[in-house]
Image (cartoon, rainbow, N blue to C red; front, side):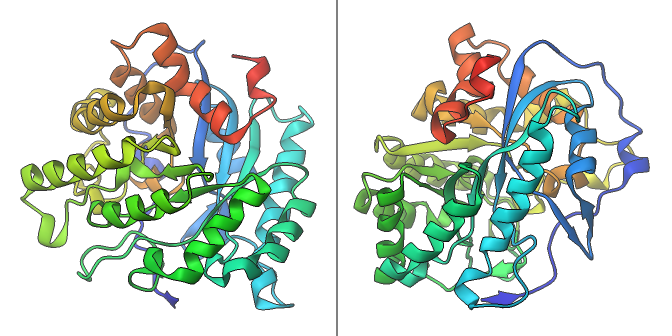
Length: 348
């Protein structure tokens, strides 16, 4: 896989501070179903930085850590180096579970990064990850987002083209079922039909679709939102018909979605974000149902465009017409069921 500079927006704390809002519905319990932690050239976002965000007013009871190639082992067999990321995330989870850092149980579930293209041979890696995870490993994610245009990029890793069609990769995904692990998949809307074919092949594996299913708004798709949303919706409709699929609502702070909020003098308000994302939200909930959708922060990736407080205010605005049962599913219940969160269930 080719490593390139991360195409993420820089985090500008002084700029983010220009937008302050009171917290909406502060008593609603929230599970952040997707975030990262790292220390790299683009900046540090470790436990203390994340806890600062989760402690900014919303009642975040639990979080799901997702693969981002943090703290890989520096030596040993190449296929085992990703085990280091599980050790790291589990250490943060143990720190948080002590209760010394507030109410949030960070990294209560962990999605790791074992190389699924190894097919059946990924089994020893999964077993090593399970052994060091403190019982918290729940799934695996591999880089899958690929587009023929260089202008469409959302990750520092470019995967091989058509990886989801590769027999070895599909065998690796099928292996997840043996261990009760799910598959997280970040793909662009142009790849959703490939993801559908993959999900059909692994009915015993829960396939979690990240970041609204990736409707792209840059490169050759800029200025073609009507066509993009039609194609995206059509592909999602097929995926939603599969009982083993789930949808994460978030990630639209990445430049690949085509929003230019980061270029404004002031950060966006939660109302601006809710208005912009409502078409995504409504289609996803209409197709998958609230019981198969969950909100995610995708921090710190999305922190270049808005603050944590404003983001969750936006989600609460999106759910303003939802029933109580739908709201509970969106903000906590779906994530609790999908990732088998224990501590969060006691607070919801």
